[in-house]
Length: 265
Image (cartoon, rainbow, N blue to C red):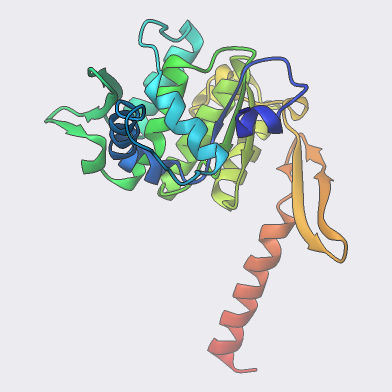
């Protein structure tokens, strides 16, 4: 049976990797699910085994976690991005410890080592991305991440956007979906930074490896319409980046409502 991501990306020749929006919950319970499947599989020849079918993206993620190969370390550029995420977002390291039947995912900080089901949703949210970058994603690959900002506070959303830009500059093709104006505005700032002098960029804390040019970025807005979902490309401006009109309309409505409440209307 072809995987969901293979079907979705048929015709794209380079390796592709897909992280669904439900990844945090999958990582929290992957060990139970994996042990159940492995345990039942060992007796499948003497007793019937019926397992409810899982969505393809979930199956792909569980399968990827089961076969991660620690013998394949990341390249130099991607290794630096892993270090950035572990140091600046999760404040610790995420890795796998192979056991006889299935891998155990663990998080370690300066104080202690934890199994992944014992950590915050923020750590488990980023853990799958860290593991994919360590052992699967390479330059030239396509990496799809749904809602990368999920479970992240605003400051970490900004840091994650910077890591996404670093991946683009490391020649990883990135496709993300987002509902976060903070994430989008950080991407816009990185686009705007490409027009600044190098010294000014450095004073603002941005390295050349995380700056995006307008040609590096494409953006689309998905909106419901009479004939189904309409997909509209958005212009990319060197000074302002991606249009944020869809977010701005909501912000204006909230502001107008607050003014009416305050002053009557």
